[in-house]
Length: 45
Image 1: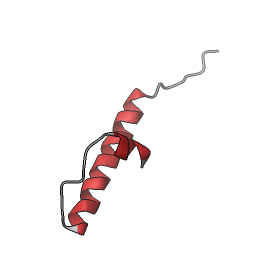
Image 2: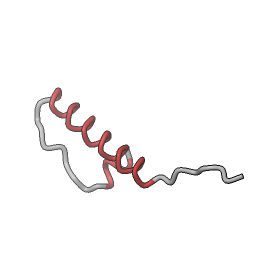
Image 3: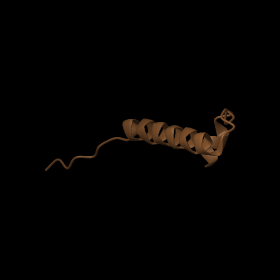
Image 4: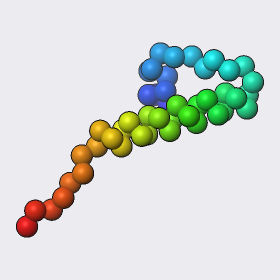
């Protein structure tokens, strides 16, 4: 939630159902970008 608020963007939708969808989309995008930036560690033996 901190990352959602720290982006500085407001929720645009006024309808509660659309607000929920908008937040879900933003969280999914943040999770995707976070996954892209995470290094995969492989064991070298």
